[in-house]
Length: 78
Image (tube, rainbow, N blue to C red; front, top):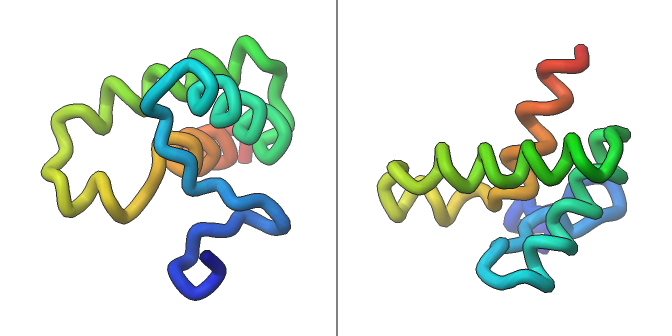
């Protein structure tokens, strides 16, 4: 996964949020990596999922909702 750029520090942040368990895992990852509370991370995941829905398939494959949410949150908090 490291060769594909799917790591964020020591975390594999490329989690495809396709069911409840993976959504929860994504939220917990975002919360931990971006250092925000669970609720903020949850909102960020669902905003990322909504935003990414309109993306073309090849772009969706390059980044996961969790990684995208972390990216947005870290830019917002910087």
